Length: 149
Ligand code: T46
Figure 1 (cartoon, rainbow, N blue to C red):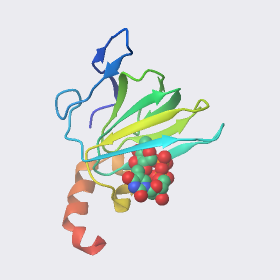
Figure 2 (figure 1 turned 180 degrees about the horizontal axis):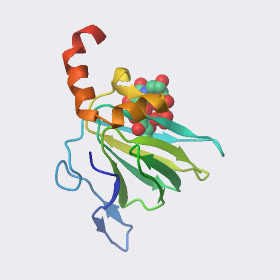
Figure 3 (figure 1 turned 45 degrees about the vertical axis):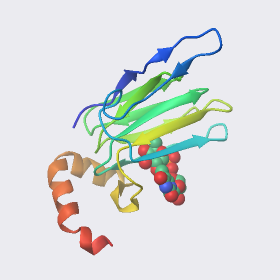
Figure 4 (figure 1 turned 90 degrees about the vertical axis):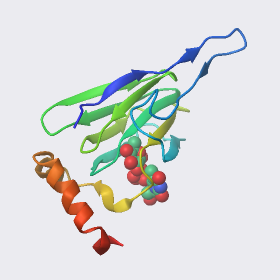
């Protein structure tokens, strides 16, 4: 598991307005299978509060700003996302909490897999247990996939 880090994305500066771009496996370390975005988040609202068993994501504040606190079970760090050409890479088995959305903030999320509700860990104590042995967790998930369908 890799601790979250910021990725500087290409920024094509132009007097007509700037442009940023993301290409699969080139600008980010996975193939994108899903894109979603968070917007119209009321002031003071918190989102997240979970980890994923097997999902990589990149979060980009396309407009405005937000804070993302990440936690690997041992270390915790808060990132401020406030530039549309910077993404925060979050690997599997990282707890994340999003807060301090500015008014009108839009957060784009690029994800490595389709939506799967069974891949969420929403209990912090369970996350801590899994963080001690994340590989075992993925193996068990794969073995029991038929039970979850
Ligand atoms: C994450 C952070 C950054 C879907 O139906 N499809 C989807 O692809 C997603 C992402 C969500 N949903 C549904 C599931 C819930 O009924 O949308 C509802 C809100 O989801 P959630 O409460 O998980 O939203 P956040 O903002 O707490 O978390 C989301 C992502 O779910 C999560 O993967 O890492 O953004």
